[in-house]
Image 1: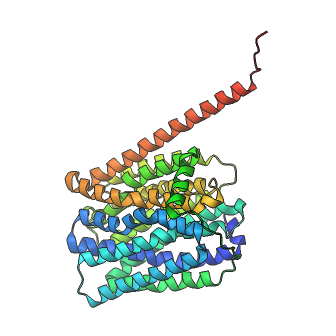
Image 2: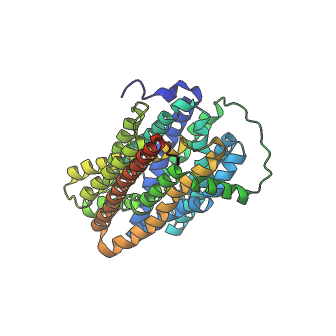
Length: 418
């Protein structure tokens, strides 16, 4: 860490946001861990783990475009308040369902669908609002700190969830998540954001969606990052759905084992986010993005067939480091490039690439693992990440060569015929 690590904390609004979100996200990871454990305990099916991920994320894929337009059209602060309140209600319903004890898997999946719908509107509003909290120069630092927040909660949440599941049961785990929303809603209400004048919206929603798509299509730097992220989200990130299989079947553990593995991945991811937050301005983020993708893939390949539990935890942490650096830099490159008027819509495409591809990948990974086994499936995911990282390096080399060629041509004198 250095003096640059916490630059974004100079903003009072960002400090409030960071504190409230940190508490709430611990609860969110506790709920995610508990849902995966409960579903696998009821079904003993890797495929159903994929279905659960699909249910929670696919609605975001379908509706994220609409969420982006709404974020660009209306007050993002009020929209975020509404989505956080709705998320709290969803958590309370899940707590009540489990408390009464008479539940089946499809009911949990249905509530996961509800959360996915809420997140389609929450993510564009939340990501866009950060831009309004800090100076533009501090935006990369704020985004990296956001990632550290997410991954510190991922470090703490699953570990706490494992202990709570064993000692107190799933009802307490879900209930703690519901209570955690009080912190984020309270922090939002304490903020003092500038009042934004309501803009007229003469264009219809579908035209604005097309505007956002055309903007991305004509901005190669953003388009490349989104395509790369979509590939990672579809074929690599769903490895997390198979962690309960490692905990229960490969390492012969309990809910605590699952929590420990998830927390170690979170520790690696948190380290990656802090590393990015500490970078001084001027670093080549595109090159770091390619290296991070290779680290992600390499860690996953080695973890996949590691039967030694302590060594498996080590490579799980390395995997988490590469994974979060890859995701965070993708977000940073988009946020620092996009035009303000397109921010919500472009972030909705980011959400589609990040969240929308994962449920499809979850179904794919769940099906493949039933066929070839969990370790081979995870190894294949790591090899895909390595391939994407190599292709990224080749793309950077071609771009550098093309840029050098253009500069050379521009410096040459113009020949004229006598």
